[in-house]
Image (cartoon, rainbow, N blue to C red; front, top):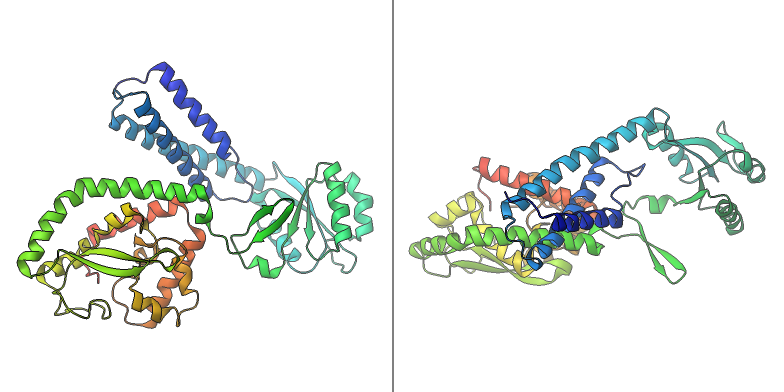
Amino acid sequence: MTAVPTKLYVLYLTVWVVLVIFRKDYKVGRTTDYLFTLQKLFGTILWFFSIISVLWIAFQAYHLSRLFLLVDAVAMMGLLSIYRVGTHIALKQYRAGGGNYRNAVIVGKGGTSFKLAKVFQSRKDFGINFLGYYDDLSDCIDTRGSLATFFEEVKEMELDIIYINERLDLGTIKKIISYADEHYIKVKVIPGGNLQLEKNLSFSKYGDFFVINVNAIPLDSFINRWSKRVFDILFSLFITVFVLSWMIPLFGLLIKLESPGPMFFVQQRNGENNKVFKCLKFRSMTPNDYADTQQATQNDPRVTRIGRFLRSSSLDEMPQFLNVLIGDMSIVGPRPHTVPMNETFKTQIEKYNTRHKIKPGITGLAQVKGYRGEIIMPYQIRSRVRLDYFYVQNWTMWMDVKIVLKTIRELVNSQDAVY
């Protein structure tokens, strides 16, 4: 491989440093896990190689082979993953042993304050040294005194964090925040029980006014959506160029030789925000009037011989990579159902429509967990929806990669029919 010219290497290194600083990859949060660290790393590497690919073309650095960029990407992912996760684990162990801790108190008992205190006691790796409560109305072994006592003792406590119960009156909250601002102490508000049920809270700012986004999802973020779209385009483009370019004419000929009709089966399905799109598949049945309303079953007489092979190998779904390129679908996401199925299920299954917050996928979490094919029993669709909901609420780029790898492994190993 040709060595990178010094000027170009310095430029690439500068891009990497700027990205790391901009995305704050150097920070290891006290309460985050290593999977979040890996997710951020993957996002930064994706940004990095997207930018240097543009520079690669702009500076006409064609002496650098694609193999060089691929090896560089794999090496960076492997080495930096080991380094980041190793650092993360080392810090967790150090904090669990009593190092790098922060002193904290909770002002105001009741509600969810007790749950937070239990977290501090059970998760020593967070490095939070809980000193106790201050409250006027309740008393226990961990209560240090009243709110008045708090303002008397706080000067001698070397506090780092004050957690405020949201039930405190506004005047007291303002007084605590004012004191904390003057003494460089962080203040955090403990949300009440209803908000604790939501796992993906974020905030929006309207001038000087803040509101809580209760039902925000990871893919509301532009960076996350962009990362997922780049992954979709690169992956589907690779499949289109190197696989579909010969698969479509080959299978198209075999399909037409066995039965008259089109090569593709085009079916209306619900996508993002319930928008209807035309989903592509290789036609696996003889043309019939029930394709949109009647699910395929085991030994379905409508399925042709080539269609049976396509279904058993899941190759009938391959044209959907064209749907991904167009932008109607994603590589990973909830599987799209037909319009009639959606009309039925949305009245029967709680939170069914939440799966349409994002683009549907060629594969998904439910599919790699075994919930695919013909829906016979009610628990099958409920389990699919539950897993789809989890995916929508907890999406990460790393999760997409794991689902893709598991799908490929199952397709290679499995001989079960997929309907």
